[in-house]
Length: 189
Image (tube, rainbow, N blue to C red):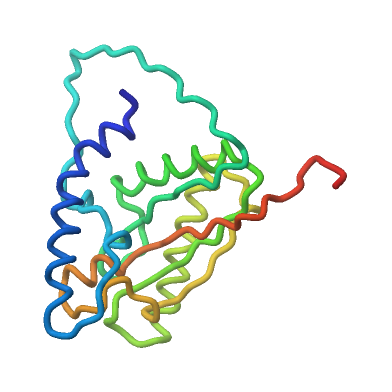
């Protein structure tokens, strides 16, 4: 089974439980509902499933994806006041890079986001460093840098408006916006 499916199988029950908790708790107290689809997978704190070194499943190559299918790219999360990419997020970016390399006709905007702590100026700069770190890492993984652009929103677009560590962890992120109009690279259209 490909590594991505193993990771999804390990995280899905936790994600569903988190979604249920968010769904039931956001309806109380007149708060606006938080979209559960935007809540990050708790894979940040959940260790990845350990595969036994004795298992020798033959790896089958993943099928080529259609060049017109818009890639679904996972968010990248950061520690407080940091823009370095953790080993777990490197795995996420490796998966994202593979999807982008298979669909070379799409362009991507990498958005840098921060939690609410700090000044507007500081968080705009930190969000920019986060977006650029993600872009640089994707380029190292073989994605054409001319297809990637960055923007920082600092603390202005939180996915979780609460004022606690869980919300702040969800807001310290880089997101990917795929431009759905494919580029015409080798055609004379």
